[in-house]
Image 1 (cartoon, rainbow, N blue to C red):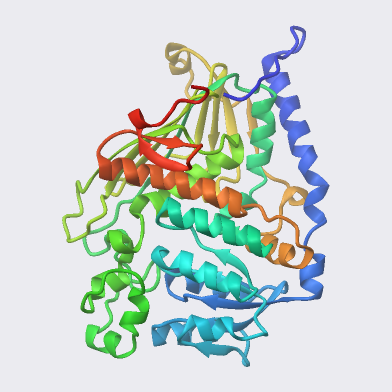
Image 2 (cartoon, rainbow, N blue to C red):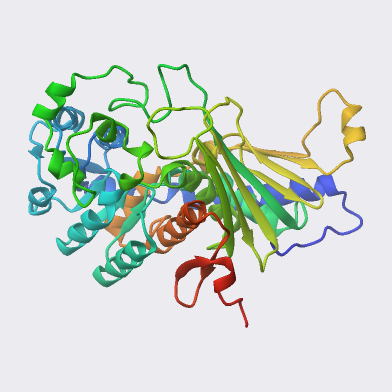
Length: 445
């Protein structure tokens, strides 16, 4: 729970919450207009590595903003490379099928890495060795050992590194944090987050083809002719070309961390941006393929419970690929609930509801919030990518730097480790290891 400040007796709780919200929101108004000038005046020369589903969206965005110029693109699959060349919005862009060649280009100042997760560590290390700043997609990596190496390398290089959790661009998190510190809903002991999906049988989750809404299957014979399969596999186990592994890599353990790195990481990073509790003490996870009975290895149903022992707070994540319901971030305190408008990366607004008995709430047709926050134009911030580009120029610390990325990686990997070990796991901060819950020394022992 966060430290709380009590309202004075002559101020109603509703007025106290409203005043806290006004003060918290006002504190964001001034700084939001200060950033963005230097990168726009001197656009960052950017290289993109990985141009598939998420990578294609990112180069589409960077190709349209003034803060950067896309000077190089790279992918091992020729149609993706052609797509990236077009979306770069630069007729002089250089196209590569080997990322080392892109890194050797002295014109490239910073890179965007949007490849399958098993590639993130090596590409980040190589980019830093080449003197580049790095924007890396989430989840940051697939092991704690890799996360340690990545964090150390960023620090040693003095580089700017941003992890791709775009929820960090939302002013709502900072307003919410300040209100919670002011005691708007009392001591927080439970937070609920989740991700849900439900689609027709011919549109399973993670089974798209190079775009989130593209379910048209390309001819496998043509795909293999235009793909460097060994270059795509990298450090993953060597197997013959498998189109399902190539297109749907999130469904298979050699290339990523399933719901942990793709969905849970978004939600837990948003919780981190509000509460800032750091790495959880323990985690227990259950996973099961309950609905999509194809050859996927990664569970379609995923539940995790994290405990932060010192602040006495539990955070739950529910992942279900058989439902259209939406579990937006919900912070539960002794005096009320703070409920956000959307999933973590889009949670731009929130409402606060007073804690009341269920029978009293049932008497009213619609419960009324005691406070509602929606950002004004003055409170809007530069995007997550613009924040990275600005920091490349100013050498300031970006919103989701290597320390925040390390927290993200350990948090999601605790979930994955608990699933594989079929038991509760604990974070050992002294050795920086995920261990069975009974094996780690307790804090202060």
